[in-house]
Image (cartoon, rainbow, N blue to C red):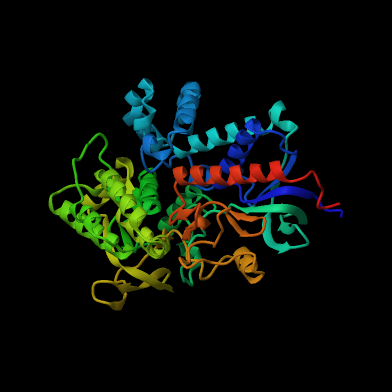
Length: 516
């Protein structure tokens, strides 16, 4: 065969790939007699190791959504902290150099913590974590010690399809220059969450994804659009999750957007943002309804959700912020989850765990307070509903939506100059072309959650075809119980499990060449 051959091929090079590779290298250093491994990393954007959250597409102003102490697991946090201490002078220079309003404000607000190196309490700019990951993986890849164990190749290409062959996979990729065929014994699908698409006939006034091609580029596009219309300078954001808060935070950094925008409308079914995290505030809170389920002989996944709803309602009536009770609530939920039988646990990972997660959404003060300020100034308004479609009318958008309160389809009364899609994760009922091909060839199967790919206890969707990252959602077997796999600690833990499996396989396999 003339085309290149590899032992392992990663499709996507974000956090899921990076941590799997980091664990694989570190575990191999401690393992006995692991054969030399040829690894291919294919990334469509050409930006390796950071993914969307920690690279250029999120820009330099984006912050981690929680303080560092909650962002990374205990094993990883000291490594990042030590890097921050080592790079402290460089970080200060970099923040000044980037020099936008948001970074200057951030540094001013956090200067005491920054100087005291109290990193655990800081909501750190996310690009710093991306730099950390990149430096860390490169130091391992290119170290003299690992050069003999791993041969790693990086390729910028869009993977169009993957075909099963006799004991290996053929990966078809394409970039601006040519089409590739790669041959690989094992494939790891490590792409992120597919972004939900909305029905619109006016793409020039619609930002389908705030991070594509990049949030800073999209902020410039919003400015230009607002300047181009003589009236109706309203912005509609679809969705009220963390990315919606992040867009509003970036609005704050643009004088033009602030001055030109008449009003921002948030259209979402929940009609509210994630709860604000109150740093340093300890709440002695006992979720009574969740706790009462422990005395029952048998529980259901639905009962856990309903009990949580009651506890949240009780807490809000007592002016207790749910964001400050996540720890005590989570402990109770996990305890109850362990008591469920296999049928109810399956229901939990496929449906109810996600619903529970939505009720516990949290965000840091910097993001939340920016939105609260807009509300206080009368420049931001919630519309409780679900987007249906939009039309171009007299050079502005007319939005049709489903009103949750009245159960009616309505036309939004105000004209919209720009619409931004912040709805987040898309159901796999209409998967991306690559996933469509994998499903058609029966390499992958969408699980009952409709948010993930069915895998076995070794993370395999098919023999030697692995899944890592957000597409693991909705899986339950003897080694895996996942209803949500987008947080850094979750990916860190799951990727280590996969790396251990891969090392074990390479220790036990004979030294043969399947491509011979």
